[in-house]
Length: 358
Ligand SMILES: Cc1cc2nc3c(=O)[nH]c(=O)nc-3n(C[C@H](O)[C@H](O)[C@H](O)COP(=O)(O)OP(=O)(O)OC[C@H]3O[C@@H](n4cnc5c(N)ncnc54)[C@H](O)[C@@H]3O)c2cc1C
Ligand code: FES
Image (cartoon, rainbow, N blue to C red):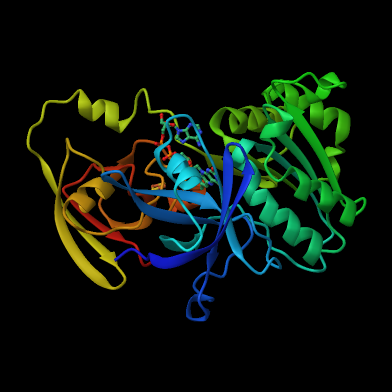
């Protein structure tokens, strides 16, 4: 039932020793399905060894590039990222879910905005799509990017960014921050920590000139940058963020509480609506979350990260009550409106009605 399409790989490009970008040929019949807003991601699905894996990867192509491309950086022991870097070849066919995600800006030719991005490692991918699209389609807007990497050789899209800086003179400011090298200016060395982000903003940005601060990368970077911006008095309404990678497992919360409880055999009755189809299954109170239990019952619900990050598994709870182990994706107003992440939700009531279509 979840929405994958078989797309042919039209190009594979080695970007650095650790990162590869992959473009997909989108047939005319699927052009609308795969139309995207810069900043969104695709979910790729493949059989890797004896496992079927799916992972979200942000689109890095701009709206005027004439292609849909993602870039995947290898992480140590990472199953899908190694497969993507070492196995995927031009001509292969990969299962791809249409674009989704909210790490986006509403492009408008009349906008006169200043966007500031903080990116770490593979967190550059959505920025490539956003920066290229903003520079081309918002002629009065400008972008400042702080891009953290270990070394110069690990900088993905280094040349493309330099080219953009030259092509759109004065509208793209680019600052590399390197953790494993010693740049001439100490400000540009070290990790993108809370202190570093504070110093970068204080020294290089007139924060009142900024319409949106955008953060994308691994958890510690996002956390540090978020704290720095809060410390500088930047309100949450001016900050957009996209967390890459798995969130740390909760030390407390429903999962831990459940694990410590005796199994009394209590079971919730779950009804799910997806694409207009109704499915029912039982959900043990002491068992797995809604999503895993549904999958085990052959109910093919949409998901990507299974970590409470990407929101691919978002649905509306029409009846009943759940507790989420973690929620790094839903906004406060979405939770208040009844939306849940099904990969993180465990029952608190004997009946749940969950709608994926709303
Ligand atoms: C919305 C979204 C968009 C994303 N876009 C991109 C993208 O454009 N490019 C890209 O390269 N990645 C991106 N990611 C991360 C990507 O989805 C995978 O998590 C990543 O490739 C690792 O998958 P894996 O199968 O190789 O690792 P796994 O085999 O799942 O994990 C192996 C080990 O690495 C840890 N781990 C998992 N992910 C990360 C991580 N990102 N950093 C550090 N440790 C990790 C795990 O906890 C585990 O210990 C995105 C994630 C999200 C949520
Ligand atoms: S699958 Fe990513 S938040 Fe649930």
